[in-house]
Structure formats: structure tokens, C-alpha cells
Length: 134
Image 1 (cartoon, rainbow, N blue to C red):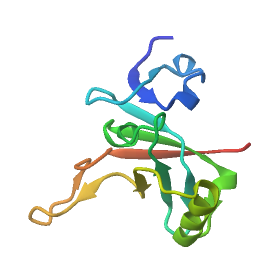
Image 2 (image 1 turned 45 degrees about the horizontal axis):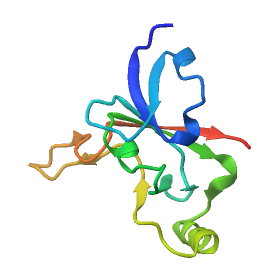
Image 3 (image 1 turned 90 degrees about the vertical axis):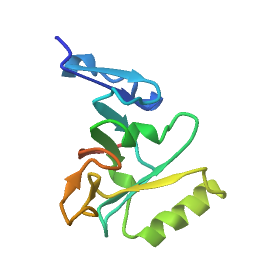
Image 4 (image 1 turned 180 degrees about the horizontal axis):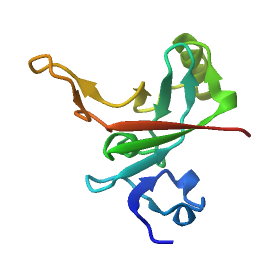
């Protein structure tokens, strides 16, 4: 199958059959030429529809920020009720905070300039969430 879109993923997802889905996905840090960035999530917050992503050696923040489309894999068991629950879980499991915690609540947008809505100004144009079991 010919690959119609190119992108990057976190190493945990490099063994999935991206080529079979028509995607050319590599496990590496993102650059400005990538169309798709595929990440996991630390957890998701039901109250606001927000994803919590932690930076680390294999969880590059740019994977969710640089490509036009961010695809996030969210384990159903990691969907929490509130922001407070997410911070409590992080403190309990990790003890110390990572270098960066990113909160994603949808595509990047702003209306700062003359009240005109602009998408993708500080991140992706599209965010897709895939809920996974297990």
C-alpha cells in the first residue's frame, strides 16, 4: 500500500502497522515537515476533555505540537474525573514533576489579532483521540 501521509510517533508505538494503514510513521523527534504526530497520554481529564502529556527522553513534546495533525492514544483506564485527580495521580506515581507537562484540549487556536479565529497558530490544526483498552 502506498503511504499517503508521513509523520512521527513516540517509540512505544513504532511497532504498530502504520504502513498497512497507509502511513509512513517513524519513531523520532518531530520536525516542521511532519504531517502527523502520534503520542500516548499520561492521562485524560473527563471534566474538560483535556489530555495530559509528560515530556521525557522518549516522549518528545514536539510530536504533539509540530505536525498539523496530532493523534493521541488514550487508555480508557487512564481517564480521570478532574484536573486535581490528574495532579494527584502524577504526584503519587512519579513523585517529582517531569521537565514539561502539556495539556491538550483540542486544536491550537487564537483570535488575538482583530478577533479573527486562526487555527494551528501554536500547535496542530487537528487533534484526534483514539481510546484504547488494556
